[in-house]
Length: 220
Length: 175
Image 1 (tube, chains in turn cyan, orange):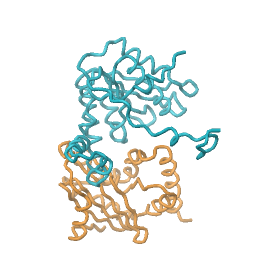
Image 2: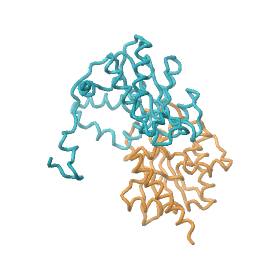
Image 3: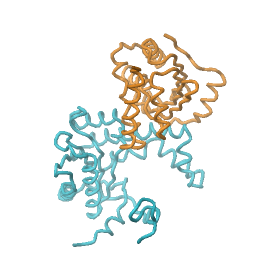
């Protein structure tokens, strides 16, 4: 059995892609990886919609832009975004980053991704915590894409609100009944057009792990 | 039996559980709570002001709140709303006592729903809910976006709200 920790550690969310199409074999491998994710009672509630049509991707990207942009505009007006980004000391750079965020441009990258894969859950077949199963499938997709030399990003924003989730379903023709399908996210995929800066800052292990009981930091 | 207290207790439990499941995302999933009432009314209007005032008339006439005031500012994006004597204020108080940030106001959901449905606004967002139990009053700061072009038009809402309060730019609608 191979240790895949290097694959996990070197993965990063990629939001800028080369225009090159993603070969079908690679898409199939990403979907295959998703299919093998852990799933309660083996329900396998996940369903996937693979999107390469530019018009559809533009609609999804625009929905993401409006969703993120509307929330971040409000957060900026409330003074919350400024606090979130105060670690950027250069005022010009901070202003540029903030504008990129509250304009919603940060989230419109689905428009430029060669492939977008919507991850949806059938609520009728999967009665055991559908979001958890679908999240495991999504992580498998990201790892497989990365191991194939592709870049990918898990995007939840455009389906975050109930109203936007319905808009998303309508774009893809997914039944909109609240008892039918739940949209968890989509995954944007393509060959990376940005460098993977590593390592990203992570909390130290001692801040995350307790031993035997909550709060106990001493390893027995 | 106090039926209002009974239903508010149930709503508080539901919102507590929902918050436990979804943390800060819970507020993004509750925007339809309350809209059935307002959608059962024939709200008319061709401007935000008309829609808001006609919603308030229906809400106060039904006894869901005693008095609601509003002001629009911040490049027509900020909708600042004051709800007094709301039927749900006990729910908000209970949640706060349990250490949960208040995140779902059925009254504002009704108004924002009609702004979207009747005026075809692009989207809305509830950015802040504050409760003052001593006055039985909620203060809400919302963003309303007529079109995608409005997104990214930022200003300081603390300043905007201060000006609204200082200059008494509130419009109060009574049933």
